[in-house]
Length: 255
Image 1 (tube, rainbow, N blue to C red):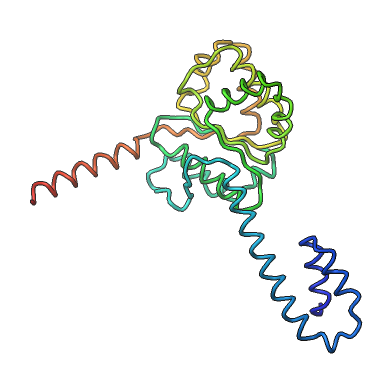
Image 2 (cartoon, helix red, strand yellow):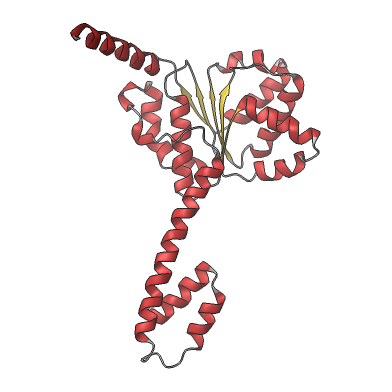
C-alpha cells in the first residue's frame, strides 16, 4: 500500500473526511510526495494518541477505587484455584464467551485485586467496564428509581462488556435492594460477563437476600457456565501487616 492510500485508510479510521477528500482529489502525487510523508506521520501519531486516550478514558469511566495490576499479584500467595485459573482469566476469553467469574472466600486473599486487575486488562484491550461495590450499586439503583431514570441506567448496564461487583455479603440489604440487584444481573445472564467477589459461600447468600427463592434463582443465573474460585486461605494483608510490625520492631530495637 502506497503512502497516499495509507493516508486515505487512516483518515477513514479516524473519521477525517475533509482530509481524506483532499488527498483523494490530489492528482499530482509526485509534487506532493513530501507533503504526504509529513501528513502520514502526523496521522499515525494522532492514531497512536487516540488509542492511548481511549484506554485512559475506559479506565477512568470504569470507576475503579484504585488501580491494581495483575502483574502486582504475589501469585505464590494465592489460593490454589486462583493460581490454576489465572492464566486463562488473563486471556480475557471469558468475556468473549459471556462467562461470569465468582470469587468467594475469606478476606485478604486477593479477590478484589484479581477482579480489578482483570478489569484493567479488559479496559486496555478495548472492553467497556463498570466497577462498583454491591452496596454502592444498590444505592445507585434506588436513586435512579426515585428519579425515574432507572430504564436509562438499565440500557447502559446490560451493554457493558464486563461488570465487576465487589464485596457482596459485607452489608445486608432490604427487599427492594435485593430485587433491584437480581433484575439487573438477570439482564446480563448468559450474554455478558460479570465478576463478583464475596466473603460468603453460596450457602450463606440467603443471609443477605433474605429470600430463599430469589437467592436460588440468582445463584443459578450467576453460576451457569461460570468460573467459581474458592479463595479461602490465609490473609495476605494480615501477613504483610505482621511483617511490617516485625520490621518496625527490629528497627526500633536497633536504634
